[in-house]
Image (cartoon, rainbow, N blue to C red; front, side):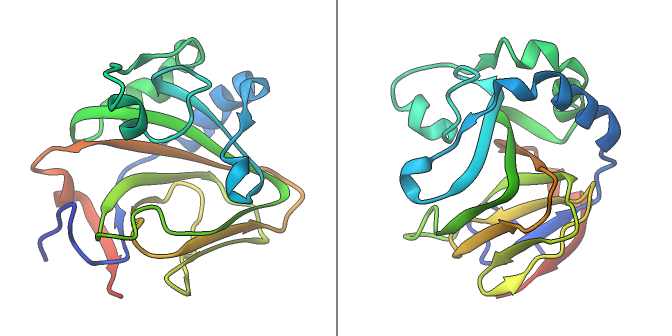
Length: 193
């Protein structure tokens, strides 16, 4: 099956070798830099920090900042995570737009939402670094059973929410960018709506 940004599949799991331990070590060295992410949307204890983008505290999606004519760069926090940045740069992208840690604190959640309701948009690469037992990721009314090291391109046209019902942080790495033509040669599995 061919995939592109307007594919209607719910998600595509990629066969990338994620160095979760090394990325988590770098995360732990900068975790005090997290800020609350999108609290105005009703989320609880959802935090983020940008490694590559428009500033470590600019944690919304890159298109919001690009409209203002800004150009992405490795942030002060990103400079403290060189292994993570280099690993992401090794992925089959022709351009990276942003790299962010997205963390849900214990007992926190991401409220139900749709990022792009007007169109199918198979876009961000959502990489699980830790996924403690008790976490639940629901996309289009179905559970996506993440485990550490899973790399999934999500279709953010579908409603989704996440709950962290554990006593540990759920740590994910999110990447937006222009995928190279061979990106989808690394598909592992995918889900139809």
